[in-house]
Length: 265
Length: 219
Image (tube, rainbow over all chains, first blue to last red; front, top):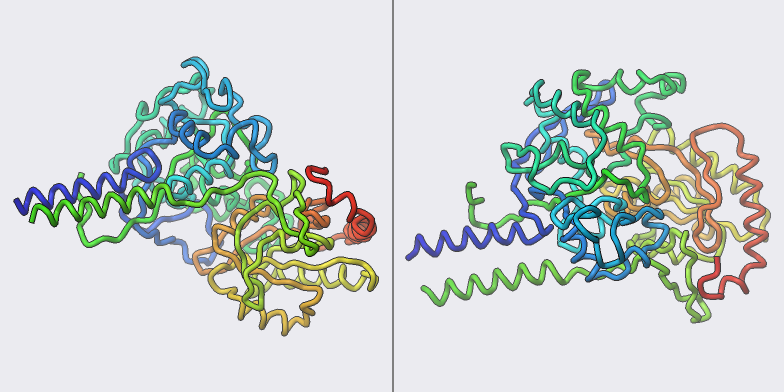
């Protein structure tokens, strides 16, 4: 009986973890992470606290729940401060994503701005992952470099994105149970505007250095991770209002501290 | 035993449901702000004063960005421990301040990147040391989330470095009385003449816009 009770509790807490973000949240252990960019002479490693990350990107169905509950985020109501004119442009109407040729319910929602992604995550009781968390989950900067995986990622980057988008959980799953970090959509992160290629206040005080392409690479920590360069470049090209065809998001959350141990998967 | 387990389950479940649903709604559009005379004013769609984040000023008073509606605001993001860029930003802001006539309604707003170390107390100390008069200068402390949101609205890239310092773009923003960004000066150094012109012109326009400002939905 006692054992059954304990198991039930474990299961319940797993369910709890799943409740924020719609998709199940997977616990990731903290660890040290080597950011792609580091100023020379700085402490290189970032220590990440344990966190949780949604197993898949937010789907059209999940996003429909959000705009149903929060009218201010419907396409016809959204403030131009928070989303450009492409916001949810592939949906048929405010509350109808349309048929499977437009926005299949189990495919990642795209054409959403950073502000919208953040509002969704907050609505579900979570937040967006940080760049370091996302990259860490994706295996970049952890010393777990896998040349084969890197090549597959680059192959995906080289292909035009598919329309309509395939469903979530259809590409690649990490050891931590996180799906589609590569191969489906690009994803918003909380601090997408943190990659400083030009105009930064430190590290590259010599103006001329900032004007060269190599200015960034000089202080990069892993020159072989070309896919990570592409992600940093893509993120730093974005503005918070941008709504783009192949850009979605997933939720994250801090790890809840409770007396029970994390149930093992 | 069974009863206790059921109770625990029930409690945990209620907790989950509440945590999921009890989050306050964020109005995304057309935030209203109460004017001193009590009338509701509707902010234009591009106004950054629509952000509903809470801040603390150097006196420790809770503020919303919409509290700064009215005068022209010259805004810069900075942090007090910055040794390189921020002193130069501040020097440029001081140059802009020295150029103002006493009758011009222009204020300066310094928002810190450093949500950890730049508490209201350290902002107050900084303001005192730098001789920033509280009638004209406001300094704001916010949570990491509030700072990130403002940085995205203003398009100011920044990153917290592992040693707790911040690497950031250096930008001076000129906001009109309703929180619309009219002008941004990117980078350090360079001419301030254009910035001065915008400030003077906006202060002048602002003086005559009080009437229009009250029409709901005016742009």
